[in-house]
Length: 120
Image 1 (cartoon, rainbow, N blue to C red):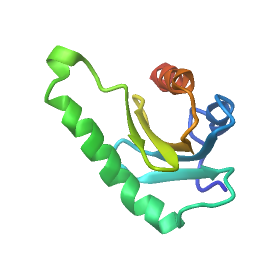
Image 2: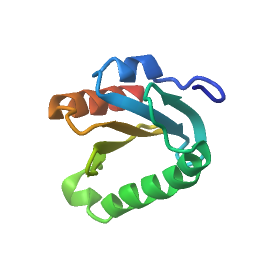
Image 3: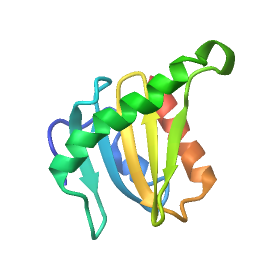
């Protein structure tokens, strides 16, 4: 599924990081959803994704602003659910909310961080 214009960081590149990645939601830095990509059998309703991605991302990254001088920028936030992981990334241009199977290895998360940093 694809809505709107393609982002600079290609969804196929992100999906190519690991087979366990199921969804990618791309939002601008204000949390407005630009694109939703999925290769999962089950998906969350699109309106739910749009409503929650901005709130999730804003909260996750605003918490990091308090310790930025000491700890540096927040690279990502990972939320573990019973059945899946949610990885929230921020590049210089976009926010990415990526859902993956719980078995997604940590090395894949580091690869996603690297790709987001490369976007600028």
